[in-house]
Image (cartoon, rainbow, N blue to C red; front, side, top):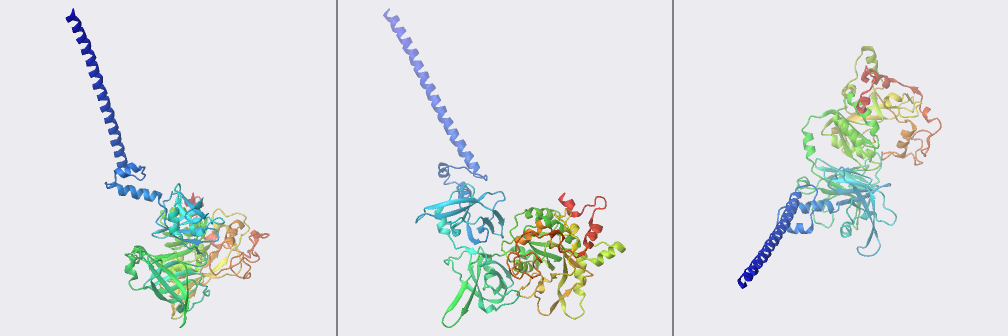
Length: 598
């Protein structure tokens, strides 16, 4: 009995002991499994973040970054985070009448959302009030920089502290104070420069030089600062000017400057005007936004065969007029186009892109400087010299017409293709004396609204057919290699090298139809903003009898009575008929620019 009870006790003890061992093993297994699961999760997360370091967008915690501190992917993460959260580097700021222009190092992505950030000091130190507004527009400026246009700073906010941020990135007051800079005025700034042989051509506003005349170059100097030099912002090299005219100062390049361009991130340039005497050296130096770079593109262009005819023009919001103007003149023989875009916001980039896809050779240059048409044309003459034999300077509302060609077209069915190219070739050889021809001038006929009240759907050449009786002014094609060293011009023509002359094309051979006074809605935009430096704006009560003004219009953009019937003395359908006979589709009647636009 006692033995039987002891056996039962041992059996119960063994069962409970085995159960305890079973639960212990199961708990241990579950713990081990849970620990392995956690280990798997952490390793998976590590690998996913490591893989993400090779992707454009990263989301890495500080723990992960410390874990990767010894790996090569740390530099990738750091650079990506830096580009995402660090401020864009604003190099300079220029104040315009209706916006603030920021010069920014690097390039923007096309779809990047940016904000203008304004700072208002409320106390000493870093305590700042900030305000954000959407950027007005951005654009590529040169090979290494971009521009952003910001609304004018509100009252009591500093223009010198306006910054640029990617959308969603906060302010960095420490960075701002380190980079606060004086603001230049658009009316007093060195805004462009170009290397020309062993000289540099500098474009500057605020020198107050005489229009259309040369000035004394001994009053001017150019100053240079290397892009990476630690010289406390001072210009360390100086050369004297060799020519001065209007807004252009030409100086000698410092010794070794060209080789330095390959090593430095640009050379900064400015201009000073001053007098030197035995007692004092009084000098006024202009603020500058200029950097000289060594462009490999110029070397490539020098080795290419030159185009016979090129055209330079400066535009503001002329996207709607561009197709007709370029397609027509390309048919006449123009092979290369330089468009200087003066702050357009009407989609001109897309129009140019579409035309280039159709094999029109067009370059668009961002040119944000107001009232600089003459200087822009001088800049273009330099730029086009290595690519073009002849360069024309005229506007997108001006069209060449050949009365003699049209007469032959009617009589002999001779097409007008390359008519402008033939005109330039014939005119350059048509001289009765020994003077070599470097400029060919063509008279302009100014057309009026021709009874219209809305823009003609087929284009200006089809709609405007009534003009003034007598020609006004002229426009020119020039040999860019034969221009005077000053690059002096008055929009309509250039000063030529000594020993070279110009040729006036007979009006029976060619004229330019200038669609100057269009329907009121179109003309009002022209009234609002004019790009020529030495042409008085219509809003200003000066030179009211000038041919650059609309007769009788006054100084206010108010539509005069019977505007649609003004400037109409002669009905002239010659160019319209010429184009219809030569370019319209015989089946549909459509013109090339209509087909292209759908």
